Length: 310
Image (cartoon, rainbow, N blue to C red; front, side):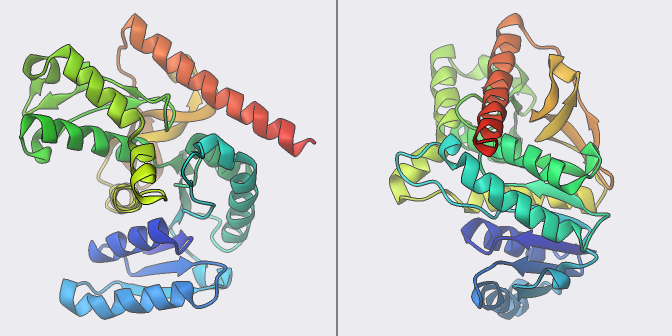
């Protein structure tokens, strides 16, 4: 199998390395418009292969012809967030970038599955969906896997338990309007509210919502280790047809009362991409948060349409 990663920046390079180190595909292609950048990073990864012990062939290129026949494409291209910049500030510029790279990639790999990482995530996934012409099961966004990982990491830090024993679920849009669900969070099968006070849970939920911004403030740029690993986990679920249930930004056809947008929900991933959107029962408050998050996504789509129409 062949995986293409569009964008050789920090996130894209991390995706490529994580996928390569899992040793589950034949080829990983890293593509970028900057000459020499993807080639250099790919060569560096190839030289690390004897140490890590993987046989995946990693190549870098500036030519989409080299991505031909890809099974999966991870789109990370776009401008990174800077301090004081919201994900929404990136809207128009990144929409143009994602549209362009999607069209170029799809021309060479018409039967692939697309995973979008570029921000604002939910809207960029919609842009890639429209530009690709693919059925909705073959286009999705990476958001919930990252957000859930942050949430689980913060719970682990607070309780002093292994992250491997923490299962969690978040829904909604990627960013400040995400909807963490403590009632669906367990530690070794024990519900989170049994082990942590409500006030502390709320603190962790709020930290999770602004987890990306916290890193931007510290480093001056967006995160890349966790986002890259999150996208690679989605790739693995598809490649191995493992039917893992992961929170992803997916196209809604009435699920959770939403339609015509991409938004985060628990998703069964397999060889066809989105195999199923899993519906769980939400409380009245959780439904209200989900609707608020969905409205934010719709507002962003309306803003993008207004910008594009002048």
